[in-house]
Amino acid sequence: EAAAATSVAGLASPLGNTAASGEIIYMAPLAIPGGQEKPSLLRGVTEKALLVHHRVRVLEGTFPRTGEVMVGRLMHRRFGVPAEDFFPGKTLLFGRDEFRISGVFEASGTVLESEAWFDRNDLATITQRDSLSAVYLRLDKAEFDDAHVFTLQRNDLELSAIPEDQYYDKLSTFYAPIRVMIWITAALVAAGALFGGLNTLYAAFASRIREMASLQCIGYTRRALLLSLIQESLLATLSGSLLAFTMALVLLDGIDIPFSLGTFTVELTPSIILIGLVTGIALGTLGTLPPALRCLQPALPVALRSS
Image 1 (tube, one colour):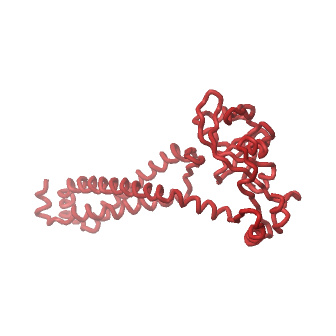
Image 2 (tube, helix red, strand yellow):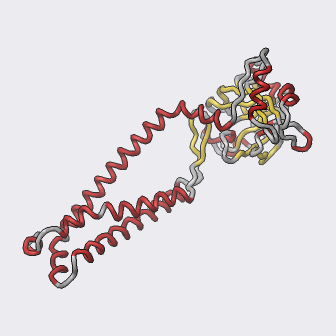
Image 3 (tube, helix red, strand yellow):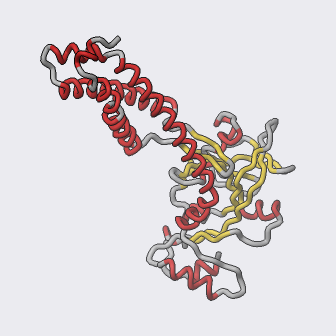
């Protein structure tokens, strides 16, 4: 940590403190008194961590010192307990050791909010680590190549420099097969819904063949009737889309979902709403054309005798 801070020129230095944080990252089960153990991501840090993880804000309490731990605001979701169980002053169990929760932090838009931050010396002692997992640098005037050159110069250490976005991009490749399975499942569900909707439209329009033929007899053109059917379907589709948006806003927006390595928050963004609205309009327009054209296709004598 000290070598990186002094050897890489151009690091950010808020309030005169170089933004270089050596950290220990460890995966281990934690527990609350009387509760089950849950696998959690632990991070051993010093106060310099706040210089590089600039989105971290301490909401309550203080930074952890010896015998203390600071938890992310979503940590309680991993344990399925109320947030009050992770307020400052509560106790967290790591093996046979007890740690007092010193504070709660947030880090919007990051994966840190479900982590537990320990004093680095405490975590090194408990895990019997004599080396750091990573040194985080926050660049100011420096370029990535400056940090890369530093890793090449230290032949006595096994070092590798990587930008944070590339690190998470490589990490996400592990979940690529899972994403493919999710997309396939979503496509199958969407296909089932599409065919079910088309079947409903065909059945609804089939019962209106005589009605459409009668309207043609009194002077309405097939184009006008086709536009009318599309408008009806579009109105129903938009109504369903608005209902779906309302349900998603009430039931899904802002909920926290825990998974193996952390917790993520579901957000209903304007772009998602726009995509849903465009999809609803497309389904209401294009999905109506086949059954509507079939409804208007029969000749008038045949259509008028239709039951």
